[in-house]
Length: 228
Image 1 (cartoon, rainbow, N blue to C red):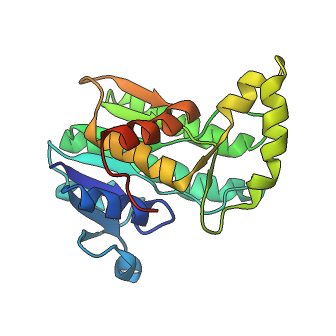
Image 2 (image 1 turned 45 degrees about the horizontal axis):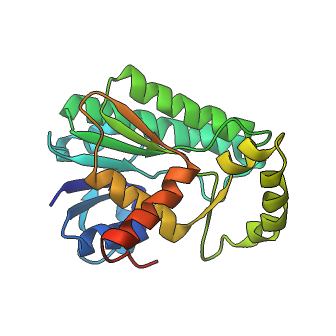
């Protein structure tokens, strides 16, 4: 059993990850404002606080904790560059600060696949989040999806024929693989694996799209797969 502290645990990925971790016997705590505490998944402990203010939750962290950072602007798009600066960047900086102060065991950060020809502002902010983790010398896993398919997030499936074409062409093959689509099930499996298999102390492990997909294959071979 691991002690897992999740920021952004009431969102699209967070609630599903919480349920999967609880089913596997982990102790899960969710950072939430009072107004969103009602959305915390049953079985998880609620910690009231502000994901943008490390002082509001650093006292809840312990040295053996894994902190999973999922805070981010919903449905990111180029039009939301100011939101990335207002929410995404200060929230990961707050998590890094709290993690370093508490001396936690492991930080898991959902970043984004890059480089890419679009979403420059989003990639910049997520890359700065990765840089903050590196500067703090934290033991961390950085997960880099491009787009996570799931309920309410299905529109990119119309691009699958193009992905197939680009994967066949030498000039575009690497980009098609790096910026491939993953499902919410694959993403949750990858995050569960990250929680349960931290990298060596003081190192940062990066999980790209192929690694996210591979986590689901490994879990099918080793045991039950979490629910979506």
